[in-house]
Length: 234
Image (cartoon, rainbow, N blue to C red; front, side, top):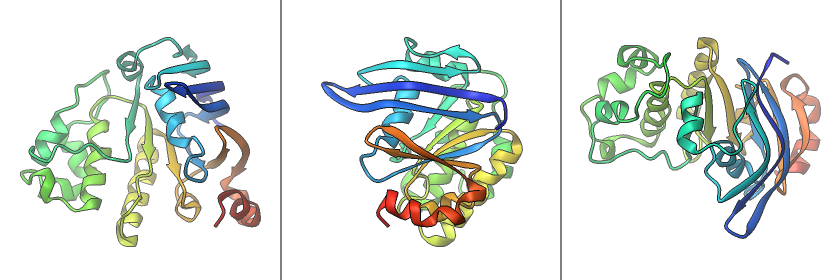
């Protein structure tokens, strides 16, 4: 594995009184694409929110570039260089594509400018004056991903980016993730569809009941299909 950029160790997390994460432990190397695979309710999205400091309570350790993040607020974690793209996308319907792109503040140097984003996402250049309500689901997902690239984040947390999208759009999202990796971004991807995950990721962590139960390198995915089907119930 490449040099560890993110190290999560014995991470517990709560929503109110509900104890959701039960000792999440995993690492992500610099420049890797890593997936969190698991059934609905396994704790994948909660893990991302815990990394970002968005839970009621969290204990354990989350280290980013060697810096401990437990105890920091969400805005401080964002300034450290981590950005999350939530499953609900959060597109502002009344704003244009360009206005949506310009909305998030830069939290550190290194973010992509509009021209660089438009080169990565030509569709967004063509739709730059369109309102968020006018975009297709695939275009909204591209906009949601593109928007966090301006912030200067090096680590991108993408939550179910292919959920509900047509197969041709899923292929475009996959191509985008591979392109971002080649550009130098590190990506943690929450997925249920391991067929899609296999096309973009280096390694896969299987999550069940709020903790990691297995790690499968992408090169071993084919030989692990029966085990994965049992884990995921597919």
